[in-house]
Length: 174
Image 1: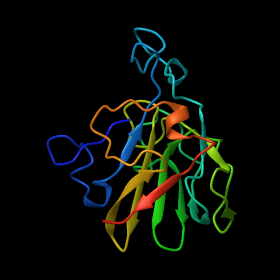
Image 2 (image 1 turned 180 degrees about the vertical axis):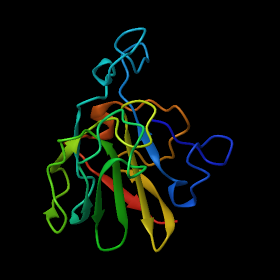
Image 3 (image 1 turned 45 degrees about the vertical axis):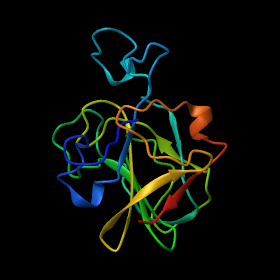
Image 4 (image 1 turned 60 degrees about the vertical axis):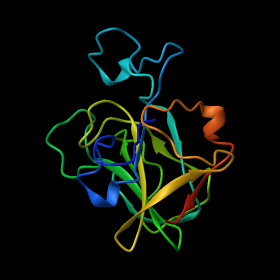
C-alpha cells in the first residue's frame, strides 16, 4: 500500500481530490511486487487479476470497463473504474482489469460484493488498485475497520489484516 501525507510523500498530491488516495499493490514475502526480476507482462505482477470487493454499500454511479490494460492511450486517468455513492461520499476504485468489472451504473452493491479485478488500466505504472473517497469536491481519508491508524508510505498490509472479503473499509470524514 502506498500513501503519504504531504507533497513530498504522496504522488497523488498534485490532484487535490486524490490527496487521501491509496494505491494497493500485491507483494511477495520478500516485498517484491513482481513475480520475476524483469516483469514484461501484467501477469508478472502479484496484484494483477486479484478480486476487488466493494468497500461499502451504495449505488454504482459509474462503471467503466473499456480500457485495455497497459495501454498508454487511455480515455480516463483511472482507466476501468467503479464509482460508488454511499449516500455521503463517492468512493472511486480504479485501474481495474479490462473485462472484469462485474457491476454497472445504477446497480446497488453491498459491501463485500465482488466488483472487478485488479488491472493496469489508465494512468498506471504497474498493476495496482487505486481507491479514494471524496465528498463535495473534498478528499476523505479512508479508514479500515480494525486498523485505526494512518498508513505511512510503503506500509505493508496483509489481505487478512485489510479484511479483503471478510471485513470492509469504512470512511472517516476530515
